[in-house]
Length: 429
Image 1 (cartoon, rainbow, N blue to C red):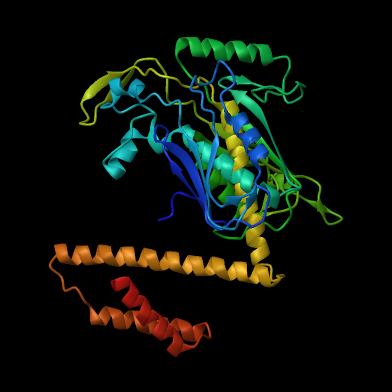
Image 2 (tube, rainbow, N blue to C red; image 1 turned 120 degrees about the vertical axis):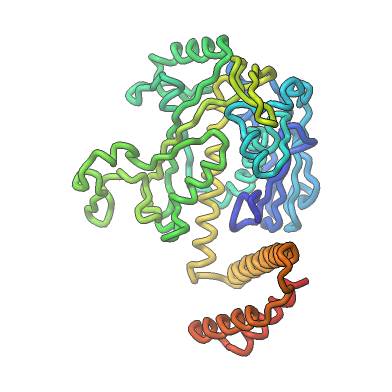
């Protein structure tokens, strides 16, 4: 399954691990003859890089290595493959606890799923993986030129910011000048203890067009939530007024209309899963990073009791570094939604129609591949359980169902049956 796909529309796949040779993306169908945004990508990667005492001491240059798809500074339309080499990984830091389950990490759950786990910095579960998301977002940014995305920090650990305060731009996106010195002391004290802090941020997107998202299972809110939950430490998302909506009567939280426009925005710019054209707003809850140097209870890979004290280079407060990642994921999500809306609006030129057909053809091929994988699993199951490899009755049922559905959908029944027979043949190989 395409679980490493970053976009359902644009065909972007990410790859790489924290201590592997590189992190990268493959963009299979980029727009041709566009200026490659070198400077914009470098600026975005710099925002994600560690730049304070609360951040990891790991320093990566994040230099781009373009493998394919760019010529003379412009995209060619060929698959675009970009690498960012890992140059400052120190895998030996993880050797002392390579046989132990690290509390808060993906070690245990991924071990149960895959029966193997890359303990060096967390492998693909590491925050290092997020550089690929920054790359992808900047490649899509021109598709949403009028949308602005801003983020402020509402809370770090137990310290909350006053939204009535004013503060000049700072590394932590903290909006309250009065409490900012206290925040810096709090973070430093936590670091000295060997502990870490999470927090809450608010993300706001302006100039989002109305009509994005599709009920019921492709709601814009649901897709944004999925995008945000793909970030390792996100543990909650609240749109609009969030928790307050649970305690208010409908008369106070309904967004009412005057002269064709909402006069409030309690729901954060999304109603019925579709954008309203108002400011899109949501809060994200982050747990602290798992890497702390305090001793903790754990087990080894054989589930025998043990204790662990992590060493190495880690963030004590990762909120500033995760903010550009959240903005990148929202950029990708909105670009997807806008492109999907354009492809399905019925207002197309020839190039647009062809793009829509190409996407459908790609989806068909992915479904064929998935069907073949499941058929192979069925074969193995039958072999293990001494069942007949072919089931003519089952095949006849499949064809009959296809014929009935084709008739309901006003499709050529004979043509559909020919396609289904070919489908059965392809899946069997």
